[in-house]
Image (cartoon, rainbow, N blue to C red; front, side, top):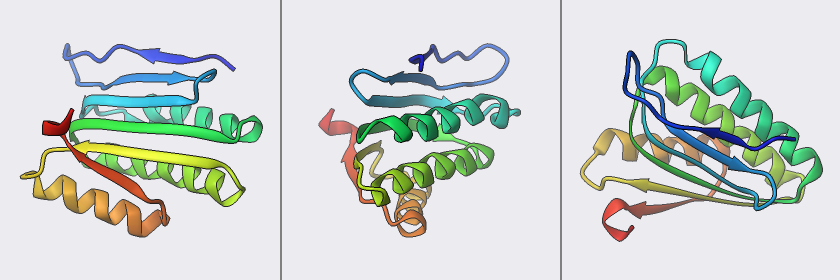
Length: 129
C-alpha cells in the first residue's frame, strides 16, 4: 500500500492537499475543494481508507478544509463512513476537524456527518492551531 501525497492547487480548479501515510496512520485533507470531477479525485482516497482498514487497527484523520462544494461533501461522507466501519470492526479511529467558528454551513455539515455516521468528531477552531 502506497502513501498518498497530493499538493493542492488553484490552477483551473481547486483541489485540496492530501497526505495519507500508512506507517503512521495519520491522514490529512486540507485547503479548499471545489473541482468539477470530485469522483476522480476522491474515489481513490475512499478506496485507500477501505484497504488500510483491512490490515491496520488505528487511524488518525484530520480535516482542515476552509471550503468545499456540495459534490465534495458526498465524498467526505463516504470517507467518514469507511472510518466508522473501521471503528465498528474494533479499530481505533480519531477524527479531528478544524473549522471556522462563524462558518455556520460548515459547522452544520460537520454535525450532520456525526449524526449520519455515528462517529465522534473533535471540533477544533482554526484559532487553536
